[in-house]
Image: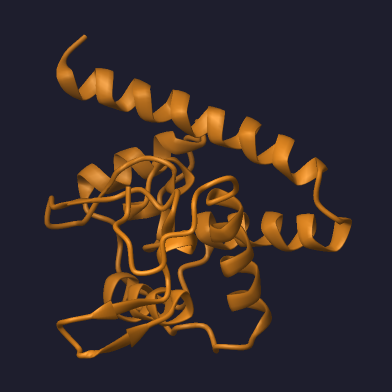
Amino acid sequence: MDHRGIVRRARMVLAGAAVVWAGASYASLPPALAQAVARGAHIFKEDSFGSQVRPVASAASAFANMDHSHRRVGFMTCAACHVGGGLTRGQLPDGRSIPSLRNAAAVFPRYSAKSHRIVTLEDQIRHCVKDGIKGRPPSYRGATMVDLVSYLKSLAFGRRMRIGGAFH
């Protein structure tokens, strides 16, 4: 098996582990919160936010293999770049590596030297949807944002809070 095959297999195993891990953590949550986390996971994987951009070939193959489905890959979603449900390092369409989202909820808010302001997790989600997916960002207080934040916070379960810290 070549390097790409090994990486693809590792991503599939990690995605499966993420589903098992998420299912186990959902059980300990109040039902309404568990449902919000599950909806957020679904939005993360499936919602294109109105984007008409298709994933590039390398992201598309990782995206298609992530859940073992063989359906036609549609438009960009969070999962096109943040593979493995966000639990593993991802890859931007230009090939640059991006950190996992395992502790994203634990490091926001953070200061952005580039924009000279404090950036919240909601700001970052809106930025990724607008500039990464090329879709319509969810409103700050809307149900979609609540569900996405709930999902990302579930990924950070048990992580040490390090506001302004680094992604891992």
